[in-house]
Length: 239
Image 1: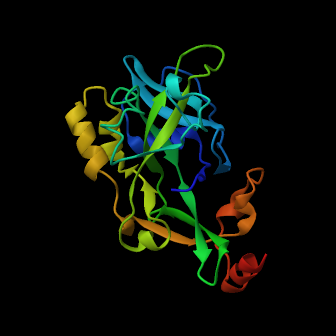
Image 2: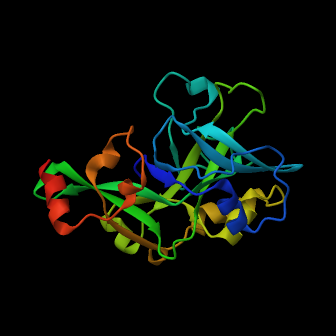
């Protein structure tokens, strides 16, 4: 998974699709989030479940344990194959489970004639419904952001046609499994099963080429997720 995704509905929309009978214990903006180009290290909404209900927090995309801070950029993703048993994310597993709600994500496909030229693709749900990325987060409830706060999105191996776009994909959960993932009562064993086999299959998604403007992190707006024509696509590759 390359490091860009979109989240542009209101938070109420994502919570409603989860059908959670839980109280949101902190405030959040009810207006559309309108983030069409979320980039690493920026702060974006994640959903967590705590003892008293749900928390919606704006958290930095990227996280490292304290002993790895400053040695390299904070990773934004955690591989499903190693996140449970590896040392790096031990501080987040399994109690740091969270959801990163989204509408879709971007990948860049190299041009076979010239690998230096890449065509961005947008991947979204075939049914148009919200997506829920399995995430791990560290969040401290305080008035000021804590330097240790952050989250990572778990990624899995791509399957079927998605392999043609990228060999990895975010661990996208159905709303039912997403509720399980959030639930503190879900055992570590069941959470491991979700990591290993809970990702929605390729047929649940559709993907299409989009304009190269998404490559600039300053660009936002719905035009970033609009399909481009074959003529526009060739123009993108020639830029």
